[in-house]
Length: 459
Image 1 (cartoon, helix red, strand yellow):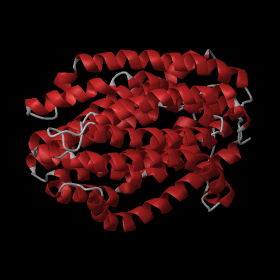
Image 2 (tube, one colour):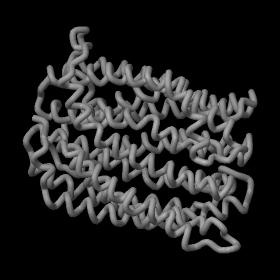
Image 3 (cartoon, one colour):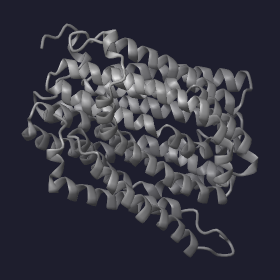
């Protein structure tokens, strides 16, 4: 295959030293995920600093609902990433073009459905979750605006998945950085200058995401030496849709399970009141920074495994898995240490209330040990998904979420009730999360060693 584009635009991960390939592919993903986290963090910072702690809590209460509404796109993105990486590794141009065109059409249909339906169910859903009345209006307004502009976020996620499957982790980074800058500028303009409150934050988000999606599509159309997308490819192809959903829905379901668990946890969190909700959101925003290496290496291992499975290089898959997992653990330890060292200062970026910042930092310390275990889970799950086995990570997630995490959170909360804590200790939610991450690493390693994922390739 002759490259007509600059070499860094896409990477063939079937050649060269595995750890070097994985690291060079992961670094742009890490920076991109950092930009994405900054994207979300700035929203919270602007709201907390310029509007108030209750507004910050309303954004926090919206998070689990938003994750549930967009989980289908996560599934499509995973499915197309696996198909693209395996077809690219096998040098099958026709199948590669068909899978990309199918993903674009499928995303359009799902986006339209959500834009029409989701705004009508958001407020009842928030009430069902015991969202405090003081933040119900702003939380529902925030989510409705995001749903009206869901196509931008959907297409950027799908197109980024396609680019990753082709080994291009650079372009998505550029577009995320661009979107982050646009989002920050618009956040400050809409909230600090125009006093639009939470609605201004959501409006800034959909504008920035829409622009990044346009840039990602333009980039994709330049890869003419790998595939072409004539109009003939843009038709409903049920075979490709079935394959994409077969590969992607387990990952989407995994995220859905996580989102459903978050809704159940959010219902418990809401009972603790606005102070705890705001503190929890602050922790989750900083937590997102600590999680960056884990998700980055997880995405990288999916593409790495997919390309090498497509090229029938299982020896490289096994060697790269070991090296990639070590890289993920090392990076996670370093970044987590830095975050804990500067944790208090980070918390004060979200609020001017010292008591709130101190309490959020206490919750963050509880989570810290779990990040290392989660890095193992993400790396090994990424390999299994890249090989075509998306069911095993899903079943592990179901078991851990509903068999361990949710019962533990409610159980610890119940057992720690007292006159001072009538609903239980707030730390229950975070303790349950650390235990779940630890068990997740053990189970994922066991199923990886069993090796059934090696026979799941789509080719």
